Structures are given as structure tokens and as C-alpha cells.
Image (cartoon, rainbow, N blue to C red; front, side):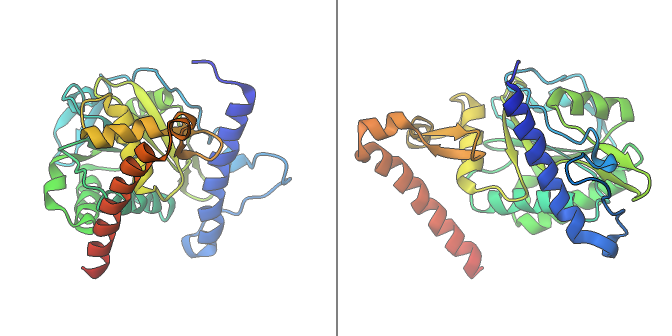
Length: 283
């Protein structure tokens, strides 16, 4: 898919900014190499660490992975089930950024009435080919414990993979990363991906926190009508994804129709989110 230079430049700038903040904040605590050089020039450690959106393109479903139990699987095994897939590329010994991304996903899912393994799948893959099954299993256990929904374990899958397979998947997603020898760490952007039940890339969400509304709409959009109630599907009529703000916003067509439909759809959704958030805080 062809994108304008401005769109690509904005995506690169956003990915870089999201990476720089946690790297600078980590500082000497994690032994990170300082970013040096002209402020207007891409730091050497971050060359190639960008996101190039490939919306509408198919994922390589034959990518070979190893799950947290040591079983060899293919990416395609998580597709074709009528459920969209949330993908994220991390590495399990990441000192900061990957943990923040995973925490952001957990926090968002906690406030949803959707569940991994029921309305959607979550596929996590390390970008470090040296990491083994034991690390994937340990990270899975800690993430699911934090999520507090044991039944989500059937739908959130953690993997390792060989270098070539990781590169194939990352390239298809437009996810740039590189090893920083000086800092002994992987440099990578903060972004999660959504794909349709057939494996078509449908949405990118950036950052380390994901609004429940954005997660739900990304799932609904990616599901192509295969999940969600009638009222929830109405949300897609009322909202569209705004590339400038990197979030879902009320669509112009919803404003033209009037307030009743919007109030019904948005009000119902926010009421559910408020009740769920209140229960989480009390718990």
C-alpha cells in the first residue's frame, strides 16, 4: 500500500518519540547507552527503528513460532477462527519499554467485556532469537496473573522464534528494530497491531497506554462484523480512526444524523466501561 511522505514521516517521528521517552527515563538504572549526536539527526542507535504501516496487507501466516510450552506452531494457527488477532512484538528481558506495552494491553483488557480466546486472540512474539521457552512461559505467567482473568490464558499466546522468522513477521508489519551493542538491548518502537480473522493487517495503535474505547473499536473493526452486539457494531458507524490524533474520534456522519444514535451507542459503551472500572478499583 502506498502512503504519502507526510504520513510516513509522522509515523517515524511518533515511533521515535515513543521510544526515546522510556529510554531516557531508564538512564543509568538499566545501563542504557546515552543517545548522542545532533538533535536534528536520527541517533545511530535508532537508525531503522521506525514503523511503516502496511494496512490492508496480509501477514505471512506460515511464519514458524515456538509457543510457551515448547511446541512448534505457525502464525496461521491463530487465524481462521472468526476472531481478530492483536499482535505485539517485544522481548521478554526488556528493562522497560516492552513491560510498559504489555502493562498497557493488560490495563486496557481489564476494562473490556471482551476476553482473549473468546472475542479475539493475542499473539506475543519476542524479537530476540536468543530468548527461550522458559522466558516466554515466565512472562506469560506474570502477565496473566496481572490481568487476573485465568480464562484469558487460552487466548493469549507467548512465543519465541528463530531470527529469520522474527524478521519476516516484523517486516510484514513494518516494525523496525535493531540491536544496540553498546547498550546491550533491543531498540524498537512502542506499537501494537490488529489483524482480521483472515490475517489482513487492519490497525496500528501507538504508545504504552491504550484506551478501552480504542481497543474495543480496533477489535470490532478488525473482526469485520464477526464479533460484537448490534449496539457495539453501531460504534463503528459513530467513530472513525483519526491518523492525526492516533485515536478513534466521532465520525462526521454520526454528527450529521444527530445526537440520539451517538448518545445511545457511546453512552451505553461508557456506562459499561465505568462500571467495569469501578469494580476493578474496588477490587
